[in-house]
Amino acid sequence: MNEPNRYSQNHSLQTTDNIYVIENFLSLIKWENGENQTALDVGCGEGHTTAEILLPKLPKCLKTLIGSDLSEKMVQFAKDTYKNQRLDFCQLDISEEAVCKEFGDMFNHVFSFFCLHWIPDQRRVFENIFKLLKPGGDMLLSFLGKNPIFDLYQNISQNIHWAPYFKKEMVSPYHECEDPQQVIRQMLMDVGFSNWKCVVTDRTYIYKNWSQLKASIIAVNPTLPQLAPHEHAEYIEDLTQEVRNIYKNRLKLLDNNNDECIPVDYKLIIVYAVKPHNGMEL
Image (cartoon, rainbow, N blue to C red; front, side, top):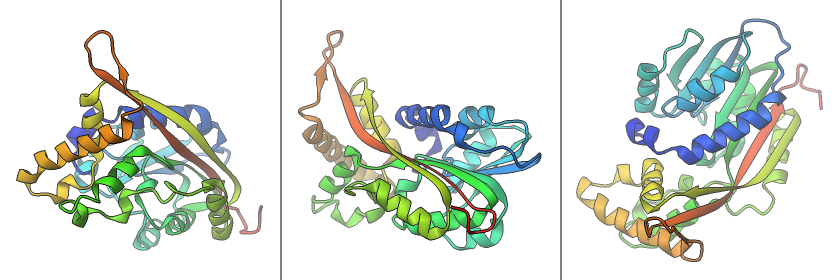
């Protein structure tokens, strides 16, 4: 996901879920530590959710919201597109230990929406966020659990031509997990978080037609950037066929233009937790 212009035009599912999480779970965040608070949004992409959805919902006591992303192109797009005196963007890899040395104990709050399922080492993610938070700080995260797009990546990796491009980070660590709540709660407890809340919710998003679904998948596809330009058309054709195989029993014919809408069922994981003041609070 390294093409901000394409992603900014094809993130309707992500935006819908981000709005859902912010509207229903942002109230868990505690804003009682005085003025000049700071917050970090991990995996901000091209900045839309950070600037247009999250920031307007945050109170005036928040001095600075920093949107961060692994992609330099995404960060630059966000900086060029969104201007606000309380908002900044930076390049950051939440899975690296170096991020803690640079930003350790800096933030009152950490957010992340629709990003962390791309990182295989989930414990490292929680450990690093713990180190980034000030004592008494809290986090609100959302990421994918089970989702047909991960079946899509696994299925197409069986194609001998595309198999070399498959990487484990293409599939959420929770895609085949029987009890993600228990797994996540145990990690939170082991890392040292308290007052944790973990919700796994069933979600459905309906794509209006094949073009919309295909554009959405291509916008976040991790294989395309690895391919030579002349391979793109063949890969997208094979990808589309795999989508049809997965959704063949879920298609709904539209009356107005003889096209098909595609309902996608998946699980969204929402996590809230607090870094204790003294390391002993439960």
